[in-house]
Length: 221
Image 1: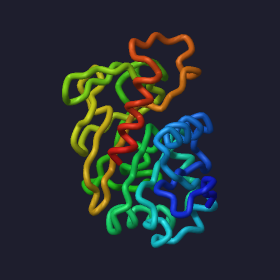
Image 2: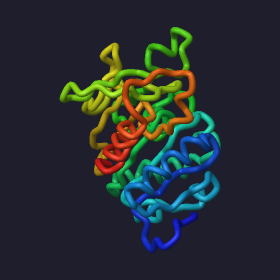
Image 3: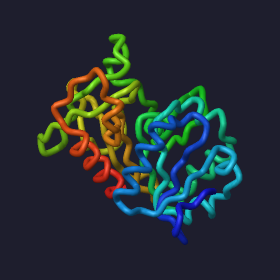
Image 4: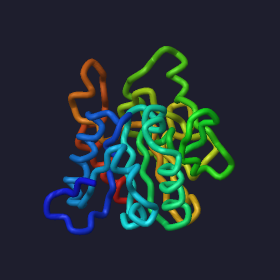
């Protein structure tokens, strides 16, 4: 496990292994840096080598965007069980963004974390089925505040948790809740997205405001 410079006991374990998007990892590191949070990174092989007790030493496990299927296929089933148990039994918190949101649920085919006790599996936000794969979507929080957020092949979270933000069609874009002893926040959008991801799209919300919201999510987790 790689530890950020000057960090003795990092607060966050950031997964950077197979299936994660390098762009999402970089954007997430920027948010963590802005918050001055200490973090360690773990590749697939490094996470596969970690025990449950090693995982639970951290306060937060952060799973960034990418491809949840690839993430799963490169982790041993024992590793996924260890991570599940560190969250549910030991109180490790989990923040899953996009693919990290899918990975938190149940697949039925692939080995996911299954943090949703009822075996809830998450589907794509409806625009995926209209042939739209990335766009600016207006996410409304519980206070009615709306932020245009970057969405790319992300899930909606019907069936689990308290809704923190909704897509335009009313389905959950961001949810939170307890999974056993762990606190879990899942986001189907990318509030950490840098300006470069927005090419060719129109946003009414600035990168700074969206990134500040990403910082809010990390802090809440």
